[in-house]
Image (cartoon, rainbow over all chains, first blue to last red; front, side, top):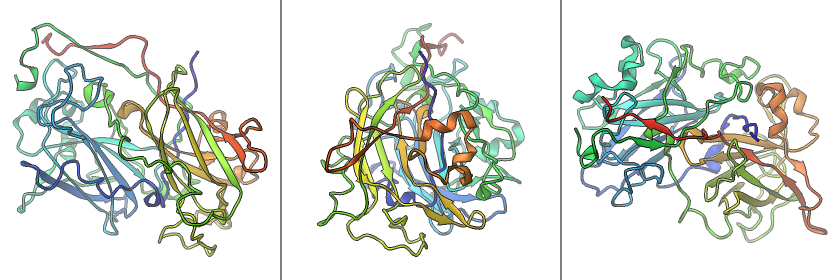
Length: 185
Length: 250
């Protein structure tokens, strides 16, 4: 017998009282070799910053494995959490500290390009948005089966840019010009 | 071929759990004009369908070390008890086939009995309660049960339209077993007269709205102490058979 699923509702404006963790943005600790900062802004359809969004990220470890029993290739080493959670600030900014994931098997028989899966919640959003962030200058991007599902002219919205200070910058544009690609899954 | 894939036999397949597509008529549309804030915050381009593979069928299994012994009791986080109507809220987290989801993190947050959140952005001129923070968490047990003790939140005004009031609700955040099951939603209380005026509950397809409303349970209600409300949460169902990832067939 199937049970009808529970509908989604907005996270609302006051989630910070409940689900922000002090270590949420720290997928890995500060001293972790190879740790890098990834962040950006969330912008609405008028180009204004969204100061009350929550960004969540999920990813494989540097060997391309997930800290999860349904990854049939076995456990990850070193207790990699794989999950990041960061609210946006008054300027719509968020940032996490993590490691670049390895390649994971993809739907077309080839390993996927390294990516983070990213979930966005906010007031005014009745169900979370789902997207992906890819890494700049990774040659695997050109052959990634999921990027190929996206119209060529919109693929750049899923790829971060490297800033001078080494931080990877990736903005989420909810609507309009340069709208980020969101996935239905 | 990356290191990840070394050591696997050519032609071998990853067997992954599959998750059924979301059933139509379940979730609210992203563009819901009655809820004004959706206007500039919904995508204008169609969503791109994404096949589920490892990234989508896995997800964070959190909670161990994040849940304190009294985190489920929102009335026990301060020296005194909060004001308001003490309630017990319990239920099960299930998948679409009615199977319990054990050991999953459930996070809740809510307004106090006066309808005020402990948040700088809440300008409602109702009193804060020094004995109420309004946040709780727990892990489901082996049968998928969660249980919270709290006070019934008050209704509160918001600026969506003139004289707009939210019906009393508790926010719930669920992870399930995979990122495809991630759900944030709100639990309401039975018979709330504000239901017909609320564009957030009203955004849900009509036939599915009742799934967000808890029921008063006199068996759960504890004499001389607290009313009990019961509410089950159903996350997306899994497919009957695993999906075979044809990774090495290329």
